Image (cartoon, rainbow, N blue to C red):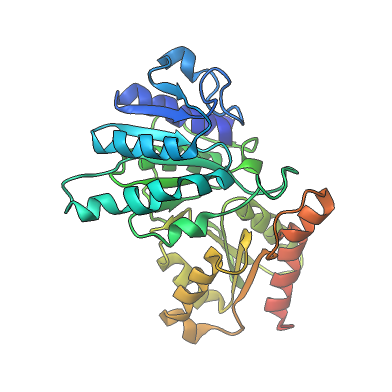
Length: 328
């Protein structure tokens, strides 16, 4: 199978969705002629024109309001927030309006939009351009939250999100845009709400999200040389979350490590931990559940401080080794 980058997979999903359905359009800051801040929408305006690839003023509230209104009137818009941090300016439209409309209208109105946003650190973009805010949206009933970790998942989940009748927050980690992987040329969807066991193992369950999935897999390779086999699970969809495979894995391994980039306090890892603690897997635990997450500080600009703030491969290796060897 051919290999393309994560960014190319997202672009291909957008192109195929727009070719298949005239109701789909892309709207955001510099998504047209410039091709998006990270080049994801490059060339789409040449194919679809400025009526379907719409450049907006610098107004995140305007983008969120526009896709909410367009979705309610029969369109299937895809909005783009240039950096995830800037979604703070559109919370009223997303939280008070889009998330609640279908419920408040008794299902007579739907809000089928996707709001894409590059999140995460690692690019030296400092505190206002590097945050991971996915848990804000997981907390809001009515919103779905997706965080693909591979090019294959990015295309399949984006196509599924565009077809969904609910508002979907689609988080794309900036460090993943250049990552390559096998992706079919044809259209395909990955159902929202299905976790993926990306590595089989017997000694420790590692649940990782977004960019942390590849780091967990690398940690698994290193630990395998010591005879420690990690089972790595990628939820892919944070809401609704498919907890079944996680529970079954913990019952098998007896241990759980949760890894994500967002800060520890209030991070999505706490939800995973609670779900396992409330499940039948709790009685199978042989060690305390552990979380690896970013430190509770704004993202530093300094490259070394930024790396020290966020879980790295060596951190996952060390914590996993401690859990398996009982050194906690």
